[in-house]
Length: 435
Image (spheres, rainbow, N blue to C red):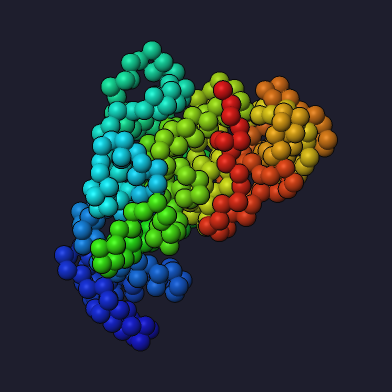
């Protein structure tokens, strides 16, 4: 143990020296390590320490105003406030082109990154496309003149609506306060447990494990951003913003804010392959998600607790589908088919039904997971909006009533592996162009 702590001292002092008092000194950090050793596996402890150490050196330029949120359940790991992080990922080609339309010159954009792009776009008026998506998602905006709305104003509207939609009742708030669970963290846990009552049924130790993974992921993300910044500083004037940006110069996931009817606060991390962070894709995807929800559940208020391509700490990789449930409506409501097709797979133990959508012109397979019961037979013909596939539930690898909906190629009857950072399922929003 003494050797191990001595190695930590050496690492912190030689590689990650703190210059601006963002973190505690070596002695205090050692005390924290000793207090935590009974709870953490050695590899987790090392990873956390290194993450904190690297984060301390983060941002010589743009990340020097990092703020932290209160932690839950006495967790002794920094909890980054993502709203204070400047994302220094290089801009994508479409983002560069968009800034050109805003009047920025190439010489100006050479010094810009994704964080700069987001700040500039926030002040711009919403595009006609985004206004169209907004009115599809929020019927109350149908007759509102949004031509002068900025993207920032709309995202503030989204935040207000999400806070209303995912507000715990007074009893739940009291229980969270009593158990020292921060509301931001309770919102995150909806990604895993789908309802506040289900979260409160879990032990502190179980919830602590999930939240520790979240805090560590945030630190790792900040470390990855720091690596990009250091590479940029050492590039000797060579711009990283080009029309062919290597993946090695990006994080695997990008944080996207402004997600309508989404449980986890104001945003989430999306695998770059989803392209959620590009142009107005986030609003388009969320509009399509609402359309899919309506097709499956009918005209009820939707709740999305995990999305296609989001990082899932409980699964250790990219989420391969959409997790959804209704805000109101009956317990374990019936689920309709989203396409005309043929049932090609049923697994009652995990509540799975797979539909091949060929009769509707689709070559893909459409997956319903975790259903409490199914209402179809193998080789049965099903019809969009008419056939009840089964009822929502929590069978299989599930921790609360919801539907996991995914799209794969038309050959497989199983979804992609979810314990890695690869995204193998198909984009459900582009496949199902529901009006």
